[in-house]
Image 1 (tube, helix red, strand yellow):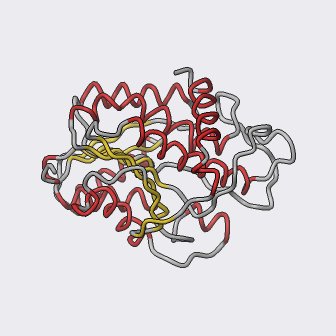
Image 2 (cartoon, one colour; image 1 turned 135 degrees about the vertical axis):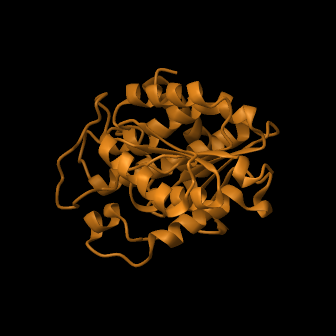
Image 3 (cartoon, helix red, strand yellow; image 1 turned 60 degrees about the horizontal axis):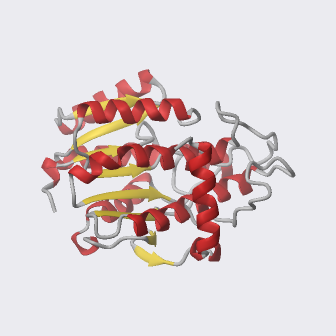
Length: 275
């Protein structure tokens, strides 16, 4: 495995919460860290904070609103333009269910259900577009940040047009990410790119959790520690297509292991992302 000081690592959603802590920890280790956010001012402040705390001047930030697949494409183009190779891609950016009393259905800029778009379609597209960079850096790793909040996808109501429930929308978007992990791992088997997903911990002290539940139980540092473990551990070299609950390999829900459901989701995702 390439020394961490020689690695280029993209952490999406890294201007806040677990993503910011993960980016900080990687910067402290000496890696080249690509930050991502949707707000320029916050991205600049985050970069300056991490530089001041670590002294690492190999930090860059990229802007993209994950509710827009056009923005995702521009992000991938910008990363590919500056970096021929990418060692680790951490798909962390996402939104929660929001205030659970608000049952109003929200849409992305492309007209898709917002949580599916941001939590799943954006990383699905970004990962595909960055595969050439990951291939240049083999052995490389893709980490999809998942959740214990998982519910089977209702393919008759993927966009939650009937009986909209924000928590169900969130849980469906998260199981979609797990299913994507399993499929992509199979496709990339023996190509030097591993693909795993993890729940970094439940109800950690993030804006998403506070908005959904009003309280939290764990720290962002604990969540970042779990992500970094799956992204860098020597024990996991060559391990692919797994779901981890923190550092332990775990079982996802039954639909994640249903090949027909995964194939249906894959075809739908390619169509929605115009791949």
